[in-house]
Image (tube, rainbow, N blue to C red; front, side, top):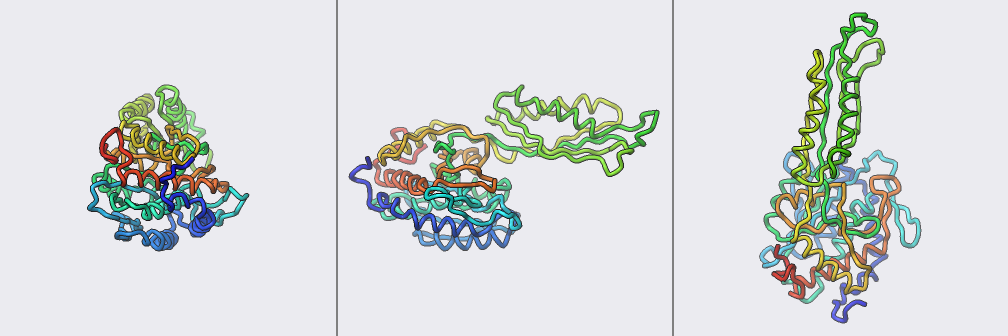
Length: 402
């Protein structure tokens, strides 16, 4: 059962279920696809309206090299204990996507674009902070929020802001969705995007001298070998996501073919081994006269690796859920990347997957378990309350020490 000392604002969060659902619908019915500048601007205004009611300074921040802006909120930056909140408001659904509106499927389930990834997480974050600010020791904790408009495309513009924030804080809280079974995330694979270009030599397909060098065949040979990497290197994932080559005439030996790869690694040390193995796959083709195979690209997100500091924070988070009478929390490794990858690589211990429970993200069946909004907000608010009041400590030290 919840402790008798539970602040009333935290205890009352489940009573706000209808209000929080209405806010989520309002946000999700506003398209904010990563490539929709107008929608991102409208969504930024909606977020600024709500998060701007928190104490502190709220500002739209330009992203270097882009026309998009992030939302930053800084509250009590002079406090001794500082926590960083991370989230994003872009979605994978563009302005022309047919999936544009929410639909209530049952009393507990809502379907809609971004309900779980991750506008639902933003509602959890906001509700938790609203409740925390009504607790008696809120003045003992400072925090910064950064809401990012380009996470779904790699956070290339937001990355410098995230790295800068990592240096100012001792703990990061990332409100990406929980796993469908409610588990949090302790580590994530690093992600990379690569392009493989095969060049051959054009010729008439009927040439008896076999003058042509078929780039598509060379690329297919390489891809067949590359697809075996996950079996050869445990912890590595490789997906062949796109292939192009040849032209409209089938009687021409194609001299150009191209494929795009999605690569994921569990540990930073695996990156060099993966790239070396890809070059080994390319070497037999490059050794043949008339062929050239090139691999370009990079890892855009380093792996988020589990750390003792994150373990200590998770133990405190688990204890808050236990005090609230909620089911025991677990956490797992996830294959998908998030901004926690960038924060962790910059040295900031992070808890990730703190958002609500749901599934089918990045599809027209994306849904959220509505009661989990208030439940997850309660855990977050109680965690902050315990840090601010000194009731909680991580690893026996300062509540937000790493």
